[in-house]
Length: 115
Image 1: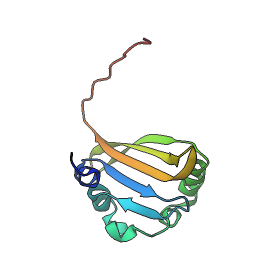
Image 2: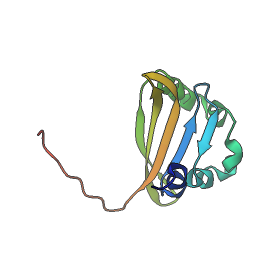
Image 3: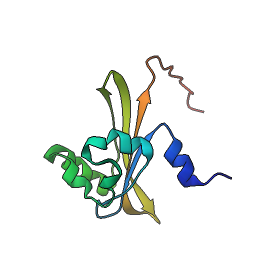
Image 4: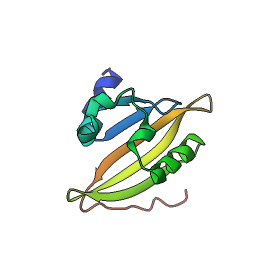
């Protein structure tokens, strides 16, 4: 079986993870590229709140309270899905995870029904 760290590094999805204090503990390669202006891999150990404005910091606090946050953006002629959520151990919030992925120009939607 492949090493999970290798898999995460190679995924075409930006992944950023914090600890319970909001310190960035992991960025995969895609996240490092997206966050290059802010320092890329040098962001590990930094406070995630320091990278954001007041509006975003309020969202971060809601995430630490257990909520999720999802939205889409347009950036550099690409549409992206941003999904942010707490990660837990035994039900306790231990930190946050953000996933950012490119949404294809044409993407089908399927209704799987209710059963």
